[in-house]
Image (cartoon, rainbow, N blue to C red; front, top):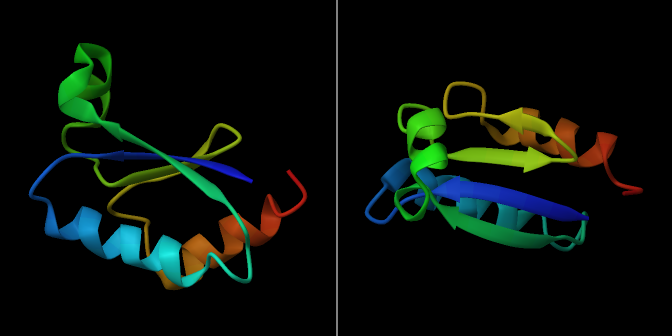
Length: 81
């Protein structure tokens, strides 16, 4: 499964989200494409107040929604992808 992870440097919430992704890596094997929002103006405009954002197959969880249970549900839903 391919996960897009919108992030930035020096972001404690992003670090926590990345640790959660790592914790689920055995049960839900995945690859993570990290996208620094400061490397693309469109990403910066869209995600500046929402990071970290985890995206799988176009479905996203942002900083307000991202927690252990929500991430596990998203990973389960997209397990076969």
